[in-house]
Image (cartoon, rainbow, N blue to C red; front, side):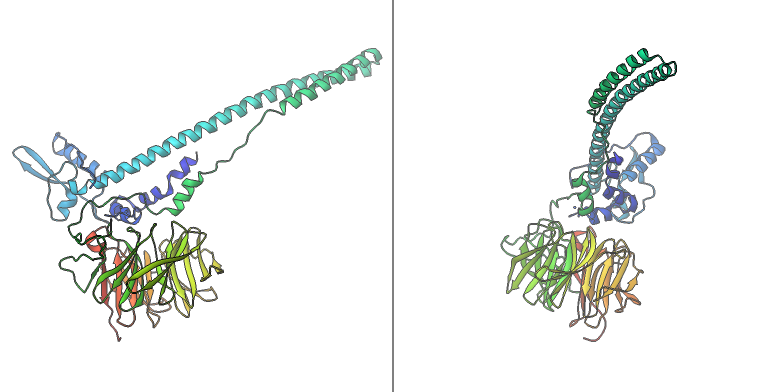
Length: 516
């Protein structure tokens, strides 16, 4: 029925990106935690064939088609094979490409989790097939019942029409031949026949001929639009896990960190970090949202550590400073903007503002909240009390995940449109930059310079205020995501969502050239 709501459009998104990008999509679509994200679990026992080199090559191609490996954008060639006295040995190619040769039947233990992603997708497809069969069965049963009732009605109508036509012919003949007695009798018979037919048609009207239009399951339909991950892969262990008590917030340190990077994973975290939002209260206080750990964290940039952590009951996406003691956080899965108060070593939940959509990016200017929505797609401007001042719904946006503002403009990044759109405060489009492939996090400097991350090109660009010109300030990154610029120190903070916990658990810091 409608191909089971078109086979879960979200899974179609996976196919659109292609098998060569499986790992990146797992993290972007699925919230893989070392999960999407759009984010191991036992062992794989694929048996190596014994039919010689040709059969081994066929088997390997089948294994590679099942799972494309561990790194995004990686294209495999042929398997790594080695002769021995006992025959051929097959090595795990993903690991071999990383310089770590491990013997394996199909894939080594380090790669087995990808097979489970495929199995999960297979289960979803099977369940959709079952639902489709059920829906089609009900439709066919209704269709058969309709045909049965229509046949009864058609037969009765045909018989009635035939009888009336015969009676009319007799009446006409008797009238022409002036056979008054026969004409009178036939008219009486016709009158009685019509009364009987009236009763027959009244009975036929009780037959319910049903007409249906397919209406998608609202729960599934809403899930396809609102959900941004397929499941989660729980991280079984981290070598860098902090040994401090759970009550103590302590960031773990990775060896060899450079440029003053800050580790933001704490002993309270159950998963690897996915930092989706950042805002600066002061050059020393950076507030971040950790989506996968459902937490808001206060980062002390001086000591390079997490000083405060507030656990939420749902995943936060973006955050903005409303005042120097108040923050606003978007909670897309609850369709709520959560206000927080901040003081020395304390974060507290305050009031909530209910909104009518999947709220994502948020920015505050002169006590006005500007919020982007992924579903329904729009940008709204609120007063702090929740009064909607304006709603922008047009073809400019398809998935506006991030937003930032200054006294002149509203900047919106949209990864599906591949644009950074500039609006004035009359909500008119001023400019539209289309040079990026995957714009995500966006931040402004005091002089109007724009910083935008691009997850496909793996760069961060610095643009002029009108987005007409730009240059790459960071390149060869691992899927950069949220960004935040400090004008006083000229430090650019950014997070990554690569699937490598050693990368995702730290905030990167880059000193942008220029005068302070």
